[in-house]
Structures are given as structure tokens and as C-alpha cells.
Length: 348
Image (cartoon, one colour):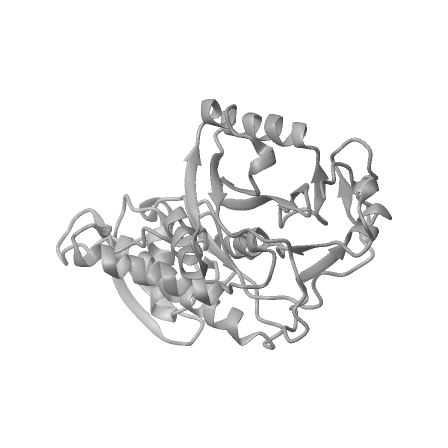
């Protein structure tokens, strides 16, 4: 049965979608799950795959010189190799990078899915029960797209710098599993709900998404690492009910601190004229003395303190006499502090 418009769909048809909470970089997980139309992967699954790929690459001399992961970034963005390996473990899937000229030759009537990536974000375009959907986890709901719009949309984002991957394999229509309990961010929409405005349509004939969706995708807060100016910010875990997410975030924290340590400048020699010795009074009450180059940015001091504290939250520095507070970590050590300064370190 071929369905071309959302208005002709039968009410019992469903589409699976996941919502990404602000500040949590789990788009790779949402991308794969919406591609396969079910809750098949968790952040732990993809993190474990990334770590294994890193280990395998180091074994043959292809690992990063600085100890950084080649397969997951500080912010939690996974490589295409991670997504490819995850799909390989689920079945006979083929993923092919696609250029604009190749897209023009793709017969969309014979295809069922694309995954797209740019600016640390993955999202899926998927045909479900004969209808194409934009299943972007940053949206408020699934959006239907006409077949014509799919072609022009892919062509445009490809020219804008997006990487587009055509996925072939057993991409089946969704079926609810009564034995699987969905998380708050996971949902099946019926086509009836989408027609009534719970979701939206980009096909030109459907309704637009409501300003306020009738469901709440998230009931609590999570813990997230996100990058801004090469710094990590964190939210406190307020809902510890998801142990898999907690495990994935802990893994991200360990990776982040490991990368931070690998980038930390070597401590200058004791008699170096271009260095400053600082007494850093940490939030734990411990005081640590360490030398830094005057030309180093305050990010070097912050990184050292984060490693000492074994935590990822942003910090600020306070000098008592005269009182100065530093939150701009781009400032240079030599312009911020005098030699033998005592610096109070606090969480931002």
C-alpha cells in the first residue's frame, strides 16, 4: 500500500521518535533508534563501541597522538564509524556517504533511510509506512515530508556542508513491543495524533506543529557534558533513576578528564624566569602549589584544578589582596596573577 500524504494514512499506523534534552549530547543514539524505529541502543552501547574502536586503532598505530578518542568527542558526538559498527551488530546494513551528484540519481521510491551529520548533531530521515519523516531529536515531534521535499532538502543541506549517508538494509516499519518499557524521551506517535496536530507536517498539506506539545518528553533533569569555547559545563544529576545514562555520563567524564590531562602544559622548571608559582586553594580545602608559564591562558590553571578535583564543572579564581575575580579563562596567567599569589578556586 503506497501512501503519499499524511491525510490518507490509517489511524493505527505509528512512527517511533526520541526527544533530545537540552544540553545532553545523545543525538547519535536518537539517530540510530529512529532509523531502526525502536529503542535498540543506549548511550552506554555507543560509548562501549567507541572505546573498543579506539583500542583497536591504538593496537595498529592509528590512535590519536594526544590520547584523545577518534570516535567520541568531549561533548559526546560519535563518529560515523561508531554508528556503522552499531548497525553492523544489528543486521546486514550498508551505509554509503552520498554527494549532491549521487543524490540526484537516488530513486527515493526504493530507499528507506538517510542519516545526516553537521555541527556535532546527527539526525534521521526515514520512510515509515510509505511516508518520509524528518525525525530530528531537536524538534518537538516527527514531521512528514513529501518525496519531492526530501530530494530538495537533502540537496540543500549537502551543499551547506552536511554529511549525508544513505542506509540500506532491513529498515522495517515500527511495531510496538509490549515487553519494552519506554523512557520518558521515547515515544510512538500514531498518524492520527500527527494529523490532529501533536506532530507537524512539512508536506504542505498537513498541520504545523503546535507551539506547546501536548506531551512532556522529559520529567526530570540529567547530567550533561557540552562544549563551548573548549570548556565543559555540567548539570547536576537530579534524577538517578536511569543507571545506563549515569554510566554513559561517567564514561564521558572520564574521557574528558583524560583528554584534559593530555593537553595540560608541562610544569616549567623551578628556575624558569617566564613562570609563576601559584598556591591554589581548592574547594575541598586542599592547597596545591604549581608553576605555570606566564604566557599560558587561565584554561591551563583551570584544567589542572579540574584534574586535581576529578570533576568537570567550570571554575572561577579569586585573589584576596587586592580582590580580583577571574571567570574569563582566556586571560593570561602573567597578567592575572603575581608570583607566589594565593588563589582561591571556586565552582562557577
